[in-house]
Image 1: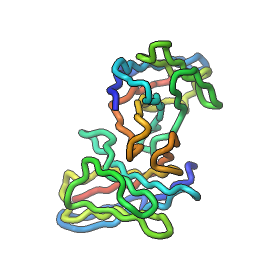
Image 2: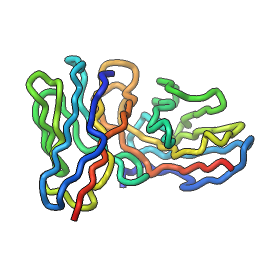
Image 3: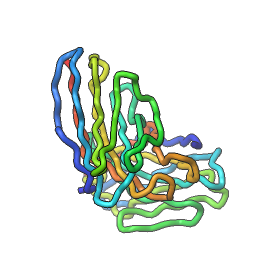
Image 4: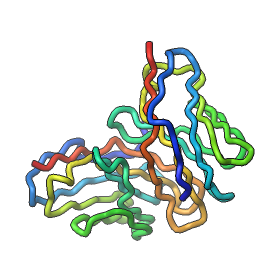
Length: 112
Length: 114
């Protein structure tokens, strides 16, 4: 699986958009970009995933660059409850397992 | 609520002991994954089962073992426990092992070894 690079931490004001970057310059054509978050010590929560097109759901938007070497997770109106560690994961599909390889993630602190 | 349940929530035991952690996947999910989260190692994949059979192994110690039962619930057995085994243990489930599906995580079991 391709390695990802994320900033260690970020701050965001409540009500503003939070833009979390992720670099995955070694991603290959059949690897998807997944985002999970972990609030305090709870179980990781799935947010969104994509292959090459931008994706949006009720939680967030995922913008993937045309060369697929980086992506940005956007939380449109951050709230205090969005304070969490956000993990960007690149997953290969087609093999025998869909295990997730977590990096260190980005600690997003939403400030009042 | 992800639909994945784990018991117990907390477990405190002594070194050398053996414990069993239990996971019930979401209804309809055939795959179960176990992950360990410790302070120094982060979230690490341990093992995966699909429809009762072991599918993949990660950084799982020989003292640890797991199984998935016919009703698809899974158990993670940890034996000869050491202080360093203190961690959060998460179970996740997904519909199918090889499709582009999503893993949903349970709330975890916090294991403390004294």
